[in-house]
Image (cartoon, rainbow, N blue to C red; front, side):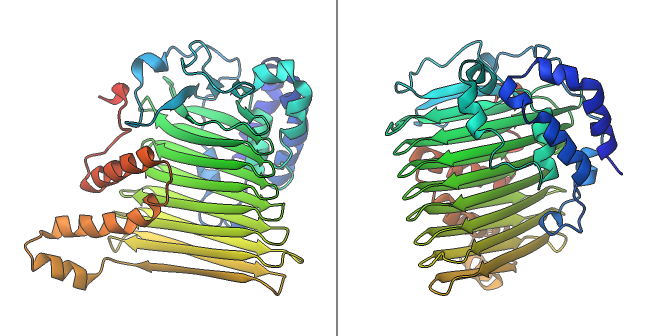
Amino acid sequence: MGSEKQYIDLYGSGRDALFSHSAAALNAVRDKAFDDFRRLGFPTRKVEKYKYTDMDSIFSPDYGLNLNRLDIPVNPYDVFRCDVPNLSTSLYFVVNDAFYSRIMPKSTLPEGVYVGSLNAYAAENPGFIADYYARIARTDTDAVTALNTMLAQDGLLVHVPRNVKVERAIQVINILRADVDLMVNRRVLIVLDEGAEARLLFCDHTADERRFLATQVTEAYVGANASLELYCMEETHHLNSRVSNVYIEQQADSRVSHNVITLHNGVTRNSLELALCGKGAECDVNGFVIADKEQHVDNNTLIDHRVSHCTSHELYKYVLDGRSVGAFAGKVLVREGAQKTVSDEVNRNLCATKEARMYTQPMLEIYADDVKCSHGSTVGQLNDAALFYMRQRGITVKEARLLLEFAFINEVVDKITLEPLRDRLHYLVEKRFRGELCKCQGCSMCK
């Protein structure tokens, strides 16, 4: 047993504190999650799903945890500015792993829509939370999900009732703030009832030059004919480790757009498991990574076609510089009976230096005969002919490389339907390639 022991011992000594600061619905699954974690242990590289990231090295340092929910001295509304120009959002904050409720946004949400603390909602509606919490995020098959479930004490809930359309995007800023090295365990629960529509933008930032470890488990339930756009953007720093598991369940004729953006990080491991459970469901799964120095980014996806007449599109792109490491493993599973499935999966990657490393593994597993499915991946360097062509026209080598890298990433950026965010990302990506974006953009803490 490696780094698991400290978390097993922690649960034994801190169980009372965990239970006393959490709602009954969260506590109801906590002991089972602990038993599952103790049985599973952290996955090694021999486990196919985790072969590209050393999980033991991520979790082995001795991090502090705020089990007693001590107050964190920060007012994010005063010191943090992470708005996207021309994007009118309903802005909320999560400080470490607690929803910030002292000051709520002035903008009003449609009647019946809830965005706030999971604990607070569970106190008034325990049955609702019990119906959804830890249902698709199974603790018996994934050790990180089990660890998060046994340690999470609060979370964020987004609930949109039947046929309600939230016109204003909901923006959630996750701030890591501490005076010591800290581990946080965030939980996100998204429930869109039948016919509901919502757009969510999650932004991860660090406020201090400390070593952070953030685990996050997101469960999203998208009802029949509902629509969810989910954007997750990371702009942290080289001391940060992030392990995120996202689980999405779609019903008939629903639409999901899931987008993962990594602009700055230390070690990042993102997992997506998306299940198409109703006929006519559609999903777009996109992501891009810009990494340099010693950064490590691992994206693992599973798109599960469980019924017929569903469509999925997937596109991930990486630009790797320095000694950075990228990994992509994407599996599309078409189950028996899932006829008329349409699916395409593409992963394209640029290694800007000989020291950069990219590992890619697109996969198709098909048990139906009337389908249209494709997958592919490429790993290469910048086109020498294109560089030569631009240099012949007076463009410097550095500028030519930047233009080619920018054009390469833009295919993913242009798929973002939220126009102000798309325009902002064009700007941030260019600054990132020019080396001018070294920390989170717009944060007064970093100025």
